[in-house]
Amino acid sequence: MKQPTLGDLAEIVGSYVDLSSVRVTEETAFGDDIPIDSQDMLRVLSRIQALYRIKFEAKDVLRIATMGDLLASVRRHTESL
Image (cartoon, helix red, strand yellow):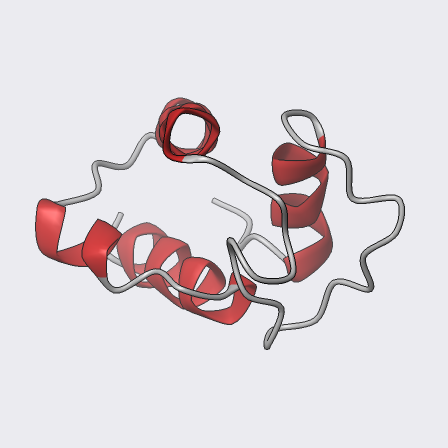
């Protein structure tokens, strides 16, 4: 399976929240930089799980504060497939 890129994940996040005024980098923070609420974040994570056929554990979700955290978590899960 192809490893996701920051752009791939930004596209998924952008389908749920407006990223037009956000410069997405690995340091871009959810909540502070990306205007996302908990419901939309769950939708994002569910979409990523379905697309990449992975399963986030609660401990993984709690550690996701930035786009870089999200990317690292998805890559960890997809490397083990």
